Image (cartoon, rainbow, N blue to C red; front, side):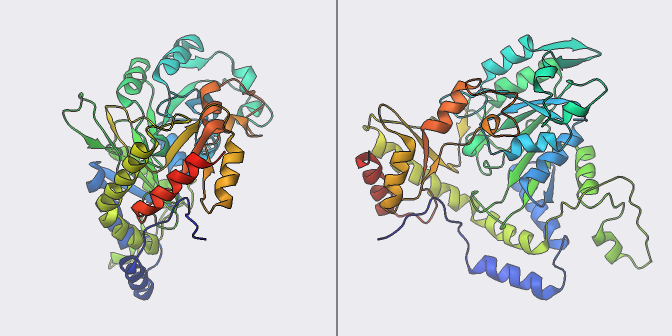
Length: 413
């Protein structure tokens, strides 16, 4: 029986040769290939600066630190995301405030965000402060041990879930109204596009429209370097901070020291991290970036086949692409209706050779966060997790593979 996987990275001889060349060069850690990858990525997204790091979680951590999130702060985000989104906030010794999602897009609901900002925060000392900080300062939270003032709103962390662009026009309008920094979790969204002028012009996610955008190159993403991440920004100060913090706070990059004809001693001026990307990964990333337009074209074709095939199947709710958004279809999620049960359907498909995944997890239902956010507090997020099924989608899929998946999904109970 042929098994159809949930995802499959598109890697070939070009990536293998690129990695081999770096290995034989003798310079395998952060070096010239990382710089080349950064320049290519910045050019692709339209950002002024791009900084490569070890993964998207470390990218989110550095981004939140750069925009000013400090110990004791809170950051508004969604629970409906991989847990790294919430964890990156706690890595800053801050705490997430979860808002619910829009049912049709799986992304932050701007209306709920607006209500949260007006009802759950109060203005003092030139900032917004969360009114119910005692509720979220549980023993698991960094705020539990904070003795000084806590609950200041440090940032807004917007997720472009499964590559579907969030409603940045509305969200950024609110952020500017309240003077809140915005970080975009674009882990899944490389190649996705957004229009902020009623579809007159389009730009890549990552330009960015917020302060910083963060990407992932995990194998489940549209392109991969095995693992790895990238930050894009138009703010040179932030970019300098990323580069300093990713390499232990080292004042002089390796490349500068190696090129110098004089002996240079570096300083370590801040407490930094080891968040570097290797040149091996970057070399693969350069080749993957070349493939990206064709990969997205193929993913959009497959998604369209799914949309057409499921259009008359009333037991399934299909994803919605907003008029301002062009997704890369990093994942294709159908939602079950009626008497269909998620785990039973997935088990039946598993036995028929079709790999699936459940809907996107909810961080607030996991042990580190559930003391502050009991089940039922984010109903749309929870419903999306519990009724959604992620179907196979990867550029190597043939039309026949799509037909097999659709037939078996529709016929399973």
